[in-house]
Length: 200
Figure (cartoon, rainbow, N blue to C red):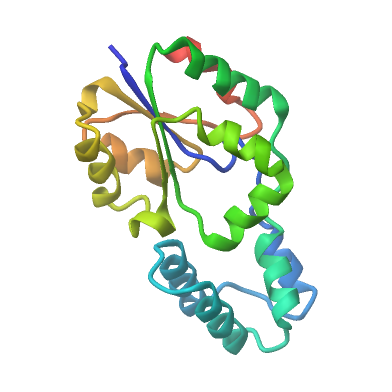
């Protein structure tokens, strides 16, 4: 029996355009994500470096981009948050039938952009639907590392077999499944979180 639900954020609730950052940087002559840039982004997502350090180091690797262009390209991934999904999670939270948690790989720049896109009132409404709201840059852990999931399980005394984790990235659901957590690898554009009841 599922008693607890852990949700991802991007492409589960808020829409993303994942190729957007590379596409926008491509307009400046940047062609590919290097291992150095990948490592930098992961460090930033894990809260191991500040926004200032991230932007400074990224500019060193992408010198053709100004600071403003770099930040704009970085945030281009963030799209809108459909009202029907906000209504859905508010209704589910109101039922009190499950303990609800959010676990997202994100960073300070993206969250600031999310708040701008959603409006602070809607963002607060969304956040209040969850018992705990775990953002990777705040907890210094990121998916798919096992410690990230274990942190949520242990802090909230959750049984893996009674917990459903929902994410649009198969690597993340595979890692959760390996710990005994039930999973739903949601296929973006084919499935929508509002059909959740059919999986409970």
